[in-house]
Length: 312
Image 1 (spheres, rainbow, N blue to C red):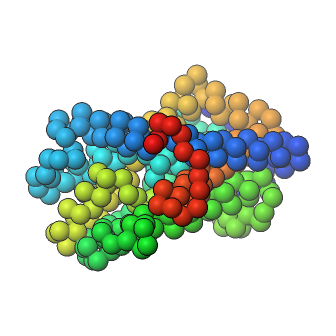
Image 2 (image 1 turned 135 degrees about the horizontal axis):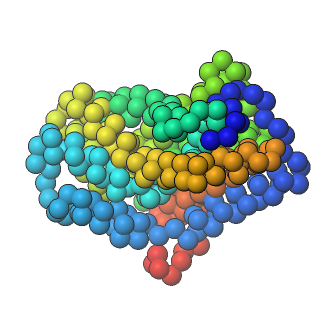
């Protein structure tokens, strides 16, 4: 590791106007392009359900959940299977922030795992609370509803609202990284250097509040049948941990491969780490807003969005 003291809450060097503009353009266009090209069929069915089928040894869609322990295993496995779905892909935007908050003065696996720990610390309360509420309310919660509002299913309306708000939050954090808007976490981070990671973790936990992924819906319905808030909290936490697993492994690989080459590269020039972090947050934020608040409603006749031939 290099002596960068990334874990310290020190003022960030301001990015130049040209470089900030380039970062905004690249991040926004990347997010928009991703929203246009995204194939839910490929990701949800081709990748997600096949991962779950391989890990569980049976078709996760049609085989009933066999008990509480099986439900817990199902929750974690389908969490991993849903890593690349449109309702979870934004988790990868946290990689830049974890590198930014990593303490470069420390060496070893423990130092690399520290940012992940703070991310999980923000995620767990949100996941657990929503799981407990969902199990308690059961089918009364909109996410399990079969009703429609106009032509749009209620559960997808909830998805559009929740992910729209989360996407806007990610975009705002990206703009704050570039000092284009006031940073709402600046003062808090002076006292608690890892506050930004905790907030990002809470947003990741919030993904479950809008998730329409079929295998997650099956797990949610199973928890709701038991009306056990403790069990609901537990399997929702397992789902979120599964959602983060591949991102965590990617982060560990990038930060430990070549003795921390990623950290050295990102801190080699003033302002680079802020620009990279902002670009990643902006990409996933723009994708999340455009996909869930424009593309999904357009499927039901509300507005228009371009459709690729393979999505027809």
